[in-house]
Image 1 (cartoon, rainbow, N blue to C red):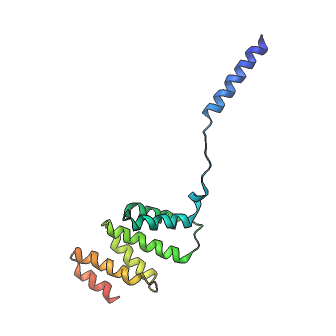
Image 2 (spheres, rainbow, N blue to C red; image 1 turned 90 degrees about the vertical axis):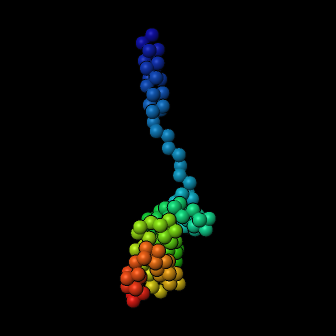
Length: 134
C-alpha cells in the first residue's frame, strides 16, 4: 500500500517535471550560415522589400562568422541604400559613411549619387556642395 502511494507520487512528480520542462528545437544550420543571410538580404532588396532587406543585412553584419570582405562591403551598401529608399533620417549619413569607409569600392560613386539625391530632395544644397568638395 505504501509502495503503491509512493509509486503514484513519483510518477506524478516525473510527469510534472517533464511537462514543465521547456521544449527546445534544434536550430537549422541555415539560421547560422552568414552567406545564406546575405543572399536572403540581397533577394529581399531586389524584390524592393527594403525594410526586411535592411534588417537582414544588419543581422548579417552583426554575425562574427562573416569573413568575405566583398560581402561585408555590399551588405553595408545595400543596407544604407535600403534606408535611402525607406526615407530613413540617417540614410544620407550612412551613405556618406560608406563612401568614406570604402572610397575604392565601385559602389562609392553610386552611394554619393544617392546621398546627393537625398540632400537635393531636402533642399540642403550647402551640405550637398560640402560632400562634393570631399
